[in-house]
Image 1 (cartoon, rainbow, N blue to C red):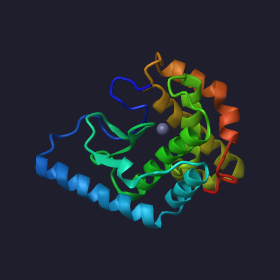
Image 2: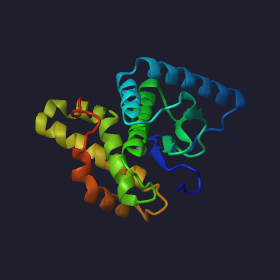
Image 3: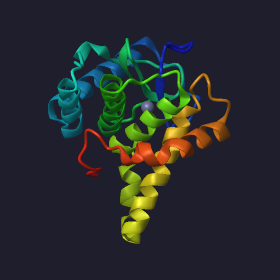
Image 4: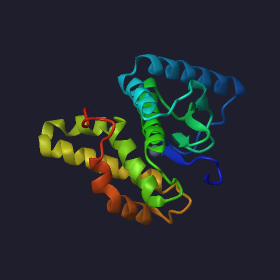
Length: 206
Ligand SMILES: [Zn+2]
């Protein structure tokens, strides 16, 4: 079920891959900050609270101690594993708003895992969940902002381009994915049906 590093899905970080060596004190303070932001989001973030509620309605339960702030050796924002839960990378998440989007993203995977029979080792299943997570979490909202001045069509296009790119960057980390071309191809194959499946959201509200 799990790949070698025990993480089924990973959310890549857009930061340089070389990070300075962190002292134990620095690591502890990064994790404490991450925990503080995590607690805040679980209480006040509309998207995080909404996903908790939807998972509950789908018959699942997100235990707060299954959302862990950790120091990640590889540059990524977070990950989801059906047994272990959600990992938030305290050393790569720059602020609480990125933490909000990352947590919302991983909760979409959690929802999919609860609601649908997801086979995480199946590339197409994985790609589908990554498309939904990228689209519904709000991580492509900055892109939406960016295109706002260019009219509605450009907004929609910008969002889709962002979702495709981010989904492919996650899919390429799958043990069965050969390379970036393969990742793009799988994402393209399932894009239309998965992008249009906005459950549990009525529509993409951001
Ligand atoms: Zn993901």
